[in-house]
Length: 391
Image (tube, rainbow, N blue to C red; front, side):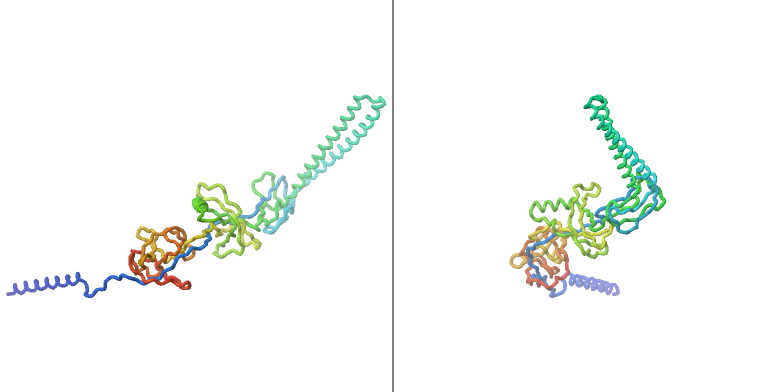
């Protein structure tokens, strides 16, 4: 009897498990069917004229930079450099001990005076010989010799004058002056130091920093792409558009620059080339060596298509896709090619055109082929942020 009762309990337990599994597989009674339509908000795309900007990093370089170097050897007798100050072209910065050079200059002047005296003697002798040769008192040979001595004396005067001029230049080199106007940096020498004409280190550096240059680096591949678009007519040239400068703290510099030139050689180590921007700097805000960023135009597109970023999703392979309102108000999946972000929108290269209605709200409820209840997004209404992947 006990064995039969135990068997009955086991059979009852097995039956109960079978019933529970069957209920789980069948699902709850009255489960709702998948929806066949959805209410969505769309944006109708339109063509617009768009200037494409590119932000590039760069460094500030002086407009003109000159090194102050000695051209003669000597001891610095007087230092007139106001380090960090503004100097004018021709202003005396260093005065060397010029005693030896002044003595050579005075000696050259004395030699010139001696040559002039000899020239006067030769001139008078030649004049007398010319008169006497007519009366036969002086032979033609002696007259010709007198004329030759006059010409030699004239040549000696020329040599003496050149020697005076040469020594005057050397004497003037003892006064080291500013080659350009600008702001001078730290002096590398002090009073009493010996400087030489062939030394490697400059005495100081002068820089003109109003205006300044901003040197940028741009990828050569990007340049080739821009040129292709210009040749194809999808972009128009915008070299005359001002360039905006951003400082290290991301604030905008108050003056705009202009493109000065672009390098014709690509750096083989980086694959980039240099662009030079000229920027006014009256307040001396931009200093040489400072890191800045520049926003410059790469071209203008007349029929650009922009789509809100909320309307672009990615498929499992990472390709950009968009859900648009197709025929009969049915959802249609559209592969899209996008190139860059413009604010909160994507610039479309292909896949979408003006007039397409792109779904920007309600994407999580939509599947391709589903009927749609379409509402246009108001101009002053921001689209909800949603980049749900489309299945």
